[in-house]
Length: 571
Image (cartoon, helix red, strand yellow):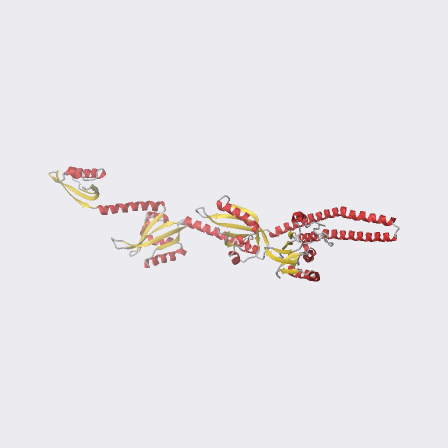
């Protein structure tokens, strides 16, 4: 059985033991009873909350006895402490986050709230008496009926009350409030209440409104811009495209959305674009601008200035790309025309230079020859020899005339060509040329294989195209192999904005190691043939280049020759 001293030692050392000593001393000295909640230490060393009640009994003004009781309140006390700690943290959180807590008693139809809610609404403490009425009065009129109906619906359907509304403050400003509440039944009183929280979302709403206005402004600029614009995903697919881009490329929005930017990019520009895109993804650059080419739906080239900017998410990761496409096709075509004119001028200068060289060489030879023959003729008395000299003079004169004719053809090929270009059907032109030499083809037993689609139309001068095809056909016949029957294959294919024609034969062929650099030279011949002048291929090359095309050749001796000609598609 403990005495007073050992009994006091049951209390936890420190505050609790000092507190019970103080209470007992006060009771003995002044007769003050005590009723306190303290911690004791059990025999097993466990802490336990107890309610300690006691008083002193006095006889003749002297304390003679202490009586009291213990009540085990450990479970309740610990629950209260936890609740108190949670409440303390909640109060700190709501105050720090500017969150107000409220509850609405359904039976009494009374609304109550904490001080944070009053501050949130800018209300005075006295408003607590008629808080529900006051709350309704400050709701913005356009929101009032909706919010009240939402609360009634949540109460009737035992659902969550979750809404946003505006309140009008005394200074006339508008504040946006977010409110969430749920039904709760008090276990002690049985009262059903809706308990909830409010917080100020005015800054958030203003930010959203600004963002919406910016989105609206961007959408207006995006959709109505005269510059082609597109949002492109990381996989290269279009996310969004505007009308201007569709107009530049000739596709509808639906058609273009089914393609990637790679599908319409010129292959020669794809790697350049991709290299910059890789740098953008790697974070080495934030944007780039390049000149590149796209393919129009109809096949021709569209020249653009492309500007690409990356867009990132909040966490810094890449979201998508914004592309701006400025169509500079008309400017580029004008530049190309200027370049073409300059090239024609340079070629004409080269032709004139050739003309000068030929005049200085060939015409001097003709002149010397004519002078010598004239001198012989003057001094010759023999009629037979004079007749022979006159015949030689006629031949020299014809040779001189032929040389002058060739020179005129060379100089005139490229004059005013660009203005004469028109759409010419290749198959129809080839048929016309074939018919013009049908007897020649039959005489030489030529096998002619033609694979030219009817719809291929090129930008050309009709007379030049006929001349080119005629020259290639007659050359194949002229330089056919005596060892085998001549076979000529003519094929065409479409490569974007070009029509490529290949003209192959199994004739004598040309030694490319020896003659590659001079195949298209003037007066260059590679076989012994009585009608070889060395002018045909020179004229052919001049004609096709005058039409902004080009010609290439591959050949093997005693196997055959293949000419590849590139023509621009007619727009």
